[in-house]
Length: 411
Length: 88
Image (cartoon, rainbow over all chains, first blue to last red):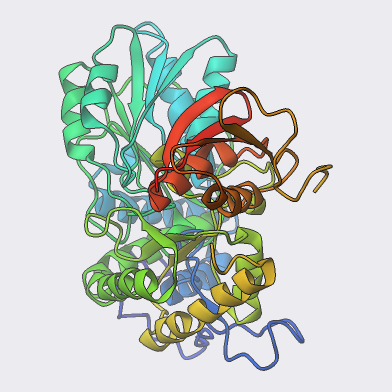
């Protein structure tokens, strides 16, 4: 598990290296001059569902392996073998976490690429069985884009609806995969916009009964919750658990009909940092869950009472430990994001005005919940209770000011 | 904001019955929902307000508003057109 001074071991036991420089706290980067408001306290980053701040273990592993893992691991000379050994160790470490053999796992260039390869590989591998791709309506856009490409190429795709909480209709999902001509199905472990956990185990049983391979996008849950079971293909994204950006995971169980030629290799240092931080995240996950879950509960409770005309969405209990989403009636989502940013809060939104296409979030639409004035808050290991306190203290005034400006206070 | 009509007022070409038309075409969400919330209380209980809105979020947010405000969403009779009945 160890190669050179690269650390792939357990969290909390970094290699003793005197030259190691402690990373700066990830929640307090230096703000750009004059922005956010000079009067505001330290920036509070609350968008871990997009990218969690780099885990110290990831930084350590990355820096160490930059010196040892820069060569092309496919070559035959000494430097390449060193890189190869690092990559093999990283693959073994990540495979152990996911519960697959190393030869069932590979690193990709990001989670989106893992999704694309996963969908394309399954559909090509199963083209003799059929051309229908069944997926929940709330999958990540990378999966939906792959489905769209499949349809453009003459295939079929069937989205399965979700309920108001964002959970897939299991009966409809079961019926959909029971049709003839189903090539593959996809169901995410937990939703990236509203946090609702999906019934993957039951969906996997339905798929297994019909011999349909199931793709599980575990991007939001891996490193935070137990690895789901019953899947044929699993994908994930390192920056969601505190690994570096630009690394994804693609696990394909032996026996799955999968036909994808993956060219190129992910940079070895990124893979090493991803694997090391995944191990660290899993080791910390129980403690982090115990700390963040009550904070999310508190946000859900306080926002619902302190902000008038707000809809807190997603499943209140069967959800990701660190994510909460709510929509504020009559408020422009983009204006809300900017107002929060001026007060130092970095959050995300599913509102249409924050997307490049003017389309509202397909997740919120599938759930039938308000899409404007939407805010997604996602916590991480550097989130302090005082950050949440300040967010909850400032949010009602920020929303009230925006409503005042828009003249929508008495509607 | 390219609408020629952003006041959310009613159009002159309202169809038969007590259906009033609120033309919010060209407005970005949440403006059509705000216009609906402003206008509906001035209509009699039981009457229908037809909101014309071409923002992609309107098809989702108008029914969602009806649910939150306990008003009745009757459906979409045509593209970019949404009927709401005042329930209370």
